[in-house]
Every structure is written in C-alpha cells, then in structure tokens.
Image (cartoon, rainbow, N blue to C red; front, side):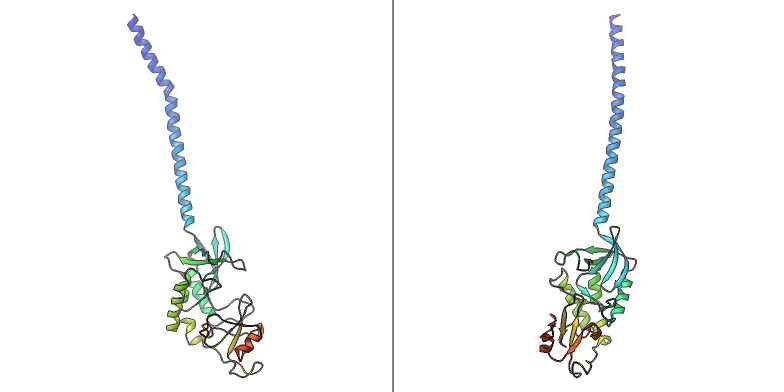
Length: 259
C-alpha cells in the first residue's frame, strides 16, 4: 500500500508541475514573439533611415540653369547649385543673357522628374543670402549635374569667396568646353561692340557689370567671362574706356582676368 501511495503521489506531483510550467512556457513563447516583432520593427526603422540617408530628393521645378526646386524631406526648397553659374533668365534687373534660355532648357531636360542627391559642402555653407540651399547635385546614376552643365558649355565654373569641393574638376571641364567652343563658348555669344555716345566711342570696350549681389565688377577683353557679359544700361551697368575710369566710378576688376 505504501508503494502505491508513493507512486500516486509522484504522478500527481508531475502533473501539478506540468500544469504550473505550461503558462510560463506560453509566456516565454509570447515574449519571444514580441521580442521578435521588436527586432523586425528596429530593422525596418534602420532600413528606412538608410533610404533617407542616401539623400535623394525629387526635383519638382527648374527655375533656371543653376537653380531649381526640390522636395527635401517633405518641404519644397529652392536649391542653388554650388560651383556653377549660368546666364541669367529670371533676374528682373537684367535682360535675358546669351545662352540663358538654352541653359535653362538643358537643366529642365536633365532634372525634370528625376531624383537627385544633394551634397552639402562645408566650405560653402548651408544657404545663400536669399535663403536657397547650397548643394552639389548628383543624379541617381552618380552624374555630377554641375560638372555636366559646365562640360557641355551651358554654365561657367563659379567660385564665390572660397573654392568649392569640386573646383578643380569644374575648371578642367570649363577648359574643355571653351577649347571646343561648346555652348556659350561658341560664336553665338560673341560680344557686341560698345556703343558710341555717353561713355565715349566704340573703342571703350570695358564692361561695367553689376552682379546678383550688387557688386560692381568690370571686365576687360582678357577676362574669362568677358564674352558672356551683357551690359544693361537700364540697370545701371555701363561701358568704360579705361580701367582708371572704371575704378574711379566704383567698379572693381573681375578676379578671372589674365592681366
């Protein structure tokens, strides 16, 4: 009888232990599932952040050859492409400059409907004085938009105060376009002769230009952008016969002249 009692007691103990442990196993299993879900959520978050980290933004509207609007993290931002300058088409103070429409149209073809990577350049800052984002721009296939515009003759290399990250490549691309007379370096933008009249005879060939920042800069025929500079006398720009005359009137010489 004692053996039977011990046997029955052992069976009961096993059954009770199994009953008590079952919820724990269920809880552990549920915890594993919850933990697994948390891991998956974390992985999804990291994957989403990876997509955002690539920096691709949709180009939504081209303003001119060096400025466009992009959807950046849900906000529409004006983006000024670093290191390039295209002839003006939208500056109300100036007439449409030679090859400006062509440059804008080329930018439209390249950027319209595309996603672009916007690269910050510490040497240039976050924004310009107009509030535009300052960025290098790359297409999804890795093409440097600014470099392409310069090499095809739609833009000049443009250094403002401090050289940008890709200045050397841009200068090499500009030399290529100029040597091959591409785009604005061709005959289409040969300078017009200076008018006779208020500022002297037609031999007065120094161009007194006013840039977007309001700086008064004069260009002699040996200056890099002389051919593309168009004088708008209605905006206060003018021709000069001598450099001393230009200096006395408050203009400074362009930095990209050979002499």
